[in-house]
Image (tube, rainbow, N blue to C red; front, side):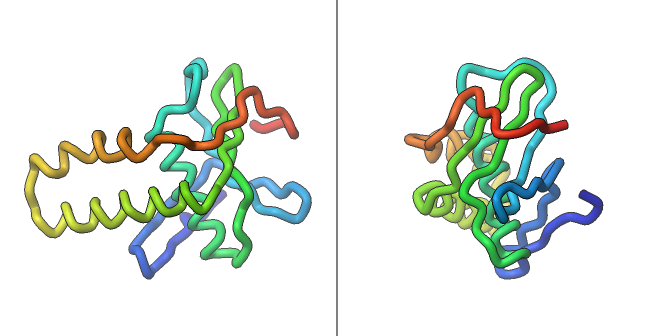
Length: 132
């Protein structure tokens, strides 16, 4: 992918490592180096969710999921309404924090992402196609 995706309403910009087409859908893929954890990290899930949102706003079609690719394993993360809602809450919190210009608030973002990461549908060992 050459050019980042942009959604002006949220001021959100991102560049997935790949966009793949599967059954008429555009699926964002984020490639991570190293071995896969037992489950994807919350920060990776929300990064991928951001790419799903950007794909939907850019191409007008909601991806059903995105893929996190590690060296030894792939995870498909369902892009549900619940995940999108949590993502939008995090983005709103970050925007609010940005306006406060409070360093301590910025440092707590990691905790916001961790707390919002509950009950995300992830498929382990996802293998619908070859990536990379």
